[in-house]
Length: 227
Image (cartoon, rainbow, N blue to C red):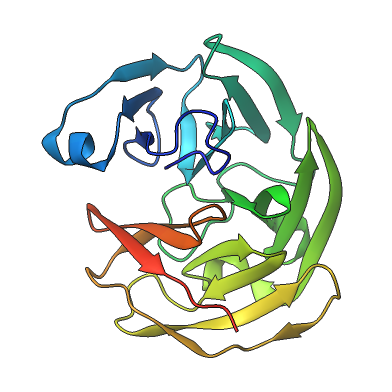
């Protein structure tokens, strides 16, 4: 992960290993140092995480505290938790993306700021998207037809939620989009390749305009072209 705001450095990369039962974040100076395995710093979080939906946004790491409905806002500069945001309606580990992995809470960042994608068990496992401003959830959108457990992965870009049909299809498609500004939903039918056959994370970086993915222990970057 990179900080899309650049506060933690334009090239700094943060790595969280495994999808559960871990609490150590590694910081690397740049991609070359990551490839060489040269860690610049490590952070030991006070709580373990669930899933692969962790994001860096400014000086903060946002993640789902393991087996809870809390989103932890961890401050890299003070090595402390500044807030815990309650995700009302979320049942821990009850619904995930197709691939499993305690992935029921997926943080995301786009040009509009911070989001959380999550599955609502009280609403037939539908995918919800909640906008976070500061330490408060300010708006929640329910995607009309999409159940989280039928989705391979999802990401947010330019206020639009995009869903990938399968985590292991090669190729598969981005087969659902929902515009949070207008409420319009459609099938963009964009081909998407899970090159290594097990894609457990897809995140958009609004500063670089690329997708970062973790596919069978490979870090993959997807360049984007917007119409």
